[in-house]
Image 1 (cartoon, rainbow, N blue to C red):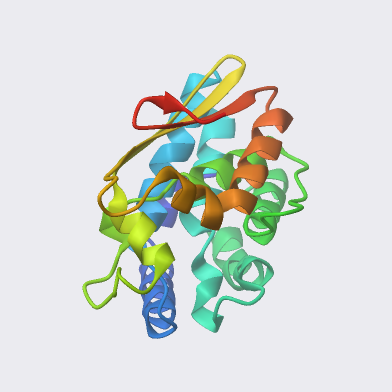
Image 2: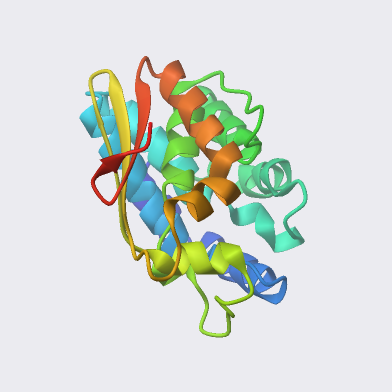
Length: 218
């Protein structure tokens, strides 16, 4: 039976997530370590709670969300499937039931295909939404140049991000500093991400909505 606290505190998993973030930092990407894992896990919890999902569904989605980027240890390419393979033995050791293991592995494997994500379970849908809702200034590294890198600039411009869910709706609400980046900048680099979030919301029986500075974008 899944026990989320044991997964989150496993010293091997924690160290692998830290090493994954070091690898991503060397490649010049935004933060993908313990902070992102924790934020994504809490976002998954909020989504599940808002939709009235069971504690079991919530725990499985939170585990997948916490672990989803562990495959960055090998680099960005195919980091979903590689991460699923890497973490599977640890999850077996932690006593996950077969269905729990299958759901977590599938969600990790499929979370990063923005344009045509394969979504077969609630776990995968929630993990995708939770992951892609984490846009925030705190993800930008101190060495980043926000003047030349639009991804860093847009993340730096987002002062606050909040994902919520209720019956029939998943909402991502952002507070963005227009002096740094505008709504068009966000949509330019995250268009495919929005498609994945919309498809995931639809799988959950919801409409996906994006709101920036209290203005509904769609």
